Each structure stands twice: as structure tokens, then as C-alpha cells.
Length: 226
Image (cartoon, rainbow, N blue to C red; front, top):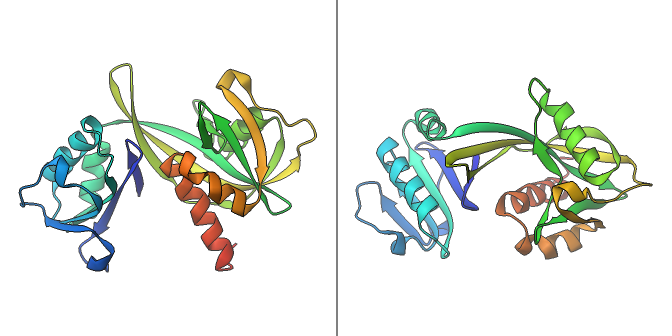
């Protein structure tokens, strides 16, 4: 489960999963005393439980943890922890696509941030159908689905409610971009084909969840999995 709270990755692992301590700047136990100021770099907390999740979510939502790169929680009961986390939010489902053409990736520029085309599903709409619809509407192109990509979850507040948006991502191929243009109603200013190198260059100006999807695709491309 790839969760992003205030654009910071929150990673949940089972206690029997391999964890390399040297990959982290700080390693804590759940019962250690710590404050938001201690959460710097990549942080690992062992022995996570529902009470710790509650505290962590509050910290990540309220505090501006600008020095925190990622937070990994290790728990004996990972599934129970995930369900407890979900229970704190209203779940909204969305779909989106990483679109390819001639080895290039389609990126969109919206509200000062580089992004991938995506949007909420309509009521009763199948996930894949909704992802294709959103991509085609936002970029005025035609696409076909090639494969699935990892899902992402990110939180935000809307009208006083805590929302956790589950986005199902698909790898797509562009079949027609002759009339390509940004959907102004969705505040999209630009739609641009980028080489993998160009896409990597703009990722610092993208949401962390978007950077995760692009890097996952490029890594799978490098390893020959796609």
C-alpha cells in the first residue's frame, strides 16, 4: 500500500519483511519518546500499533514536516494497521494513466505542478474505464490500456472531511494525439510529451505520488519487466 500524507510517503511493512537499517537516518521503537522535530530524513519505527498510527497521521497532517523524506512503520499485524488507517478517512476512488508514445511519457502541468492525467471515477464506473475516460478528457487524446501499474493512496481535506484517494494507475499507449490539448476546466495549462530523461528532470516539481509512479515505470523498463 503506497500511502502519501501531505505528500510524504508512509510505508507499512510486516515485521518479517527484510529491513535494512542502514537505509534509514533514524530508527525508533513505537514506545520511544519523539517529537515532530526528530522526524528528519528517512525514518523507521518498529512495533507500530493503531495508537502509533493515530499519532503519526495527526503529526503528518498538522505539522509541516519539511525535513521528513519518508516514514516506514513495521508492524506484526500489517493488515490490521492498514484497515485502522483507512477507517480514519473517507475513501474516494480514482483512475489515471502513464501514457506512452514513441518511447515518450505524457506529462501535464496543473496548478504549478507536473502531474499525470487522472481523476475520480463516476458512480458505478469500472476502474479501467474511468482511468481511460479521465486521460482522454484531460488531454483530448485516444488511448488503449497496456498494463497495470501500482496503486497509490493520498490524503487531503475537503469541506472539513479527511479524504484518502485510492488511484488505480494503468500503463497506456496513445493511439491518436492529433487534437491534443489541455483541459482548461481542470486547470491544466500544458500537455507535453517527454523523454524519460526529461520526465526525471521535472519530477522534483511533481507530487511525490506521481514521481513514485514514473520511477516505478522507468525501473520496470530498465529491468525488462514491461
